[in-house]
Image 1 (cartoon, helix red, strand yellow):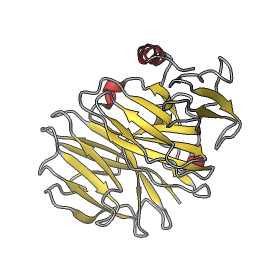
Image 2 (image 1 turned 90 degrees about the vertical axis):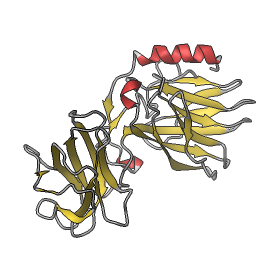
Image 3 (image 1 turned 180 degrees about the horizontal axis):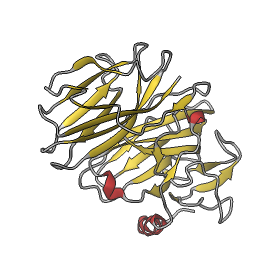
Amino acid sequence: MGMSQGALQQALAGQVARLDHNLIADQLDLGFPALQQNWIRNGDFEYWPDGVAVDPLSWVSAGAGLAIARSATRKIGDYSALLTSGGVACFIAQAINDFLYFRGRVVTLGCWVWCATAGKAQIEIDDGVTSAYSGFHTGGSTWEWLTVTRLVDAAAAQLIVRGRVEPTAELGYFDGMILVDQTEFVHVKAHEKYVIRDLPAWDFTLGAPFITNGVLQVNGLDCSAIVPFGAKAVHFNAQIRDDAAGSEFTIQRDAVNVANWCQLTTKVANISEYAHAIVACNSDRLFDYIGTNLVFNVINVGVAGWFI
């Protein structure tokens, strides 16, 4: 049911205590590998403990005249969330736990959305300073995968995700919503297989082979002895530490696909930063890399698996 903005904020705050960190069990149907931690609770909208026409577990809806319902029109699982707008835009929202952690970090929100009318349904990330929106669903009564990426403000007072439907009397279905730290993903088709690799020690360390002179090292990271021919993407784990803040280390597919990367930036001097990311690979399994600072204290990179 709809509620005032003040009541919404109070309800969202109350929901935070019910949230916890959960892993994506199987998101191949969403077009993404099941590797990233999903920070959304009940993102598949399977749990409706208070009734099928009341807000689902861990979600709060708002917007004058809206209707919310559990729907069997779904992309994954058994149910989706159906929002029907009234005279104003409506949304279903969730406050993300530990939002302070995300200050200064890049997050991506994705969701399957169904709508019959173009320009009426979308998703949103709101950090209390600025909101970022996905593109609108194009209409046509089909499921579309919508995404939006935002660099969370360093002064963020919240981190709230929303599924939105514009007025009037428009229907929008939402299913399989995920929020993940880091930006880059690789679209993984259902027939592609993820191979898990044991990683008792780092594969690559500072000085072997990493040269950090501020120059892009083309094909400088050779994974061909680890990753088999035919692999589509590599799952990297990485750690860096430096005696200065703002030092960046990036692994990228090649000089053309510069945004298909695993990137780390030191936030505080002498404090390690960690990341894991999926980076698409060419058939030679050679990656470019660059370190912006001339001297890093630590660079460690490991291959945790690959898609083939």
